[in-house]
Amino acid sequence: MSSNDARPLLSALFGLMLLTGCAHAEIACPAKAAAGGVLSGAEVFDGPPEELASLVPDGEDGVSWDLKGYHDSPRELYLVCEYADGAKQNMLLPKDVSECTVQGKGEVSARCN
Figure 1 (cartoon, rainbow, N blue to C red):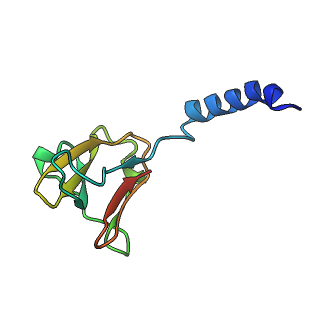
Figure 2 (cartoon, rainbow, N blue to C red):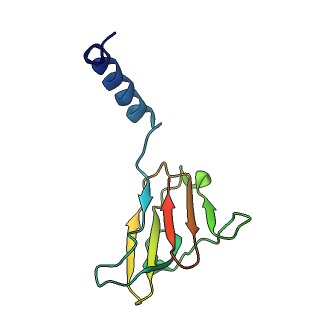
């Protein structure tokens, strides 16, 4: 089977994955804010961040959130990226996100998948 013959099959498989929720994009905080501040941390919120419903990390490492239990919740989850200059960026998370993690001390990264 040539690569041209496999394209329709691969397209169909990818489409099936999307329809069944097997594939979703990773959400990550930008390393720098628009004004240039570097990423210093992140939090996950149950509902709009202005409601102040910050979720407590539940991973043993203290910097991860298991979000599988929120898939059926009517409320939306947000990843709030926090920068050293005080800037914040709110990111609405897709319903199928299962986990968020924050890693690093000097060079921090925050992502959900």
